[in-house]
Amino acid sequence: MRLKKHQTKLLTVLVFLLGFLLTAFTAGQWKGKIEKEDGMTVIRNPKEPLYGELVLDLEQDLNIGREDDENYAFYKSATCALDSQENIYVLDFDQCRIQQYDREGKFVKAIGRKGQGPGEIESPFQIFIDHQDNIYIFQERQFKVFRTDGGFVKSIALRNFLSDFFITRQGTFFALFLQVDEKTRANAVAEFDAEGNLINTLASYPNEAFVTSPRKAGEGMVIASFFFSHEYNNEICFCPVGPVSFCYGHSSEYKIFVVDAEGKVKFIIKKDDEPQPISGKEKRAIIDRHAKSRRAIIGKISRGEIERGLFFPKNKPFFNQLLADDKERIYVKRLTSSALDKEPPKEYTFDIFSREGRCLHRAKMPFIPLLIRNGHLYQIKMDEEAGLTKILRYKIRNWAELKEE
Image (cartoon, rainbow, N blue to C red; front, top):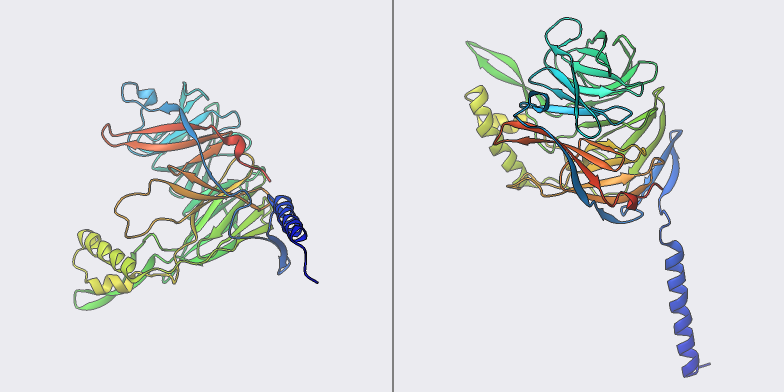
């Protein structure tokens, strides 16, 4: 039976309305899956984030760093951390001290000084403030612990070279560390007791930048070790997530482990992204760059030896940094640049996940923040002309647009 003209029009309108209502109903609904793999909860996210792309609208509201006042000067390299009141603690690598500022950037006091004794700092590498506002300064194979009032608490001797930390309320901690033996190097995530003793290794991955190569030495051959690192080497990324958990992931796959303070995996975040192969042109550019720089460092070395020493994974890393904000959202910095780029990227791409592991946004930022706290981004920036480092803070004017779930 043939439909009359007006019936056809009515049917078309009904189909259109049904499609519109279906789209409206499903908009904003997460299209991922929650699964079980080997007894662990896996949050599997689709390729596209739940709420699409978001460009952060930034306004600088704090600038600490000038050369006319010693209390505000940081030479060469520095990093910083925040306490529970958002006071700012700047670790100056060159002056081996901590400079404390209030939330408005006013100098409060200096903590520590250069030296090898109790309460003194030498060759600092990293600063971390726990949830009891204790300041941990990491230097070579040692923690120096201070209170925020400046008092020295203790030193903790370490048997391993560590980087990136999560300190529990009990004083134990999780960290990345370098496993070393005669032939191999591996990057690992491990748990340590309050005295710095290794308790348990959670995960371990080969260090792709480490190679051994036979070299002539006098009349014989020796095995020489080199670190040939490049932007496509995979690595473990790690960051604290709130007061009772942290996360880590190996960049060879889009897989982030969220772990509690007892070292148990709470859940695993996965995202359906396609791997990006490394092109032959990109490999040649990296080999050429290493051939030029390595000869200047270690003398005569053939291009072939460098090519054999460089390890190239099949695909580019999915990410190369993890961050978290005070709402326990996880920011995964995507690798979007290429070895062929002549200039640094003008913006950086982050996938933002909720505290439950759902991908909420793809965000664009003009720089890589050191910290994200209470609607602000913190940046360490080197002023090359003045030879000074500056601590910059930016207000995220569209902070309210970042969804929590």
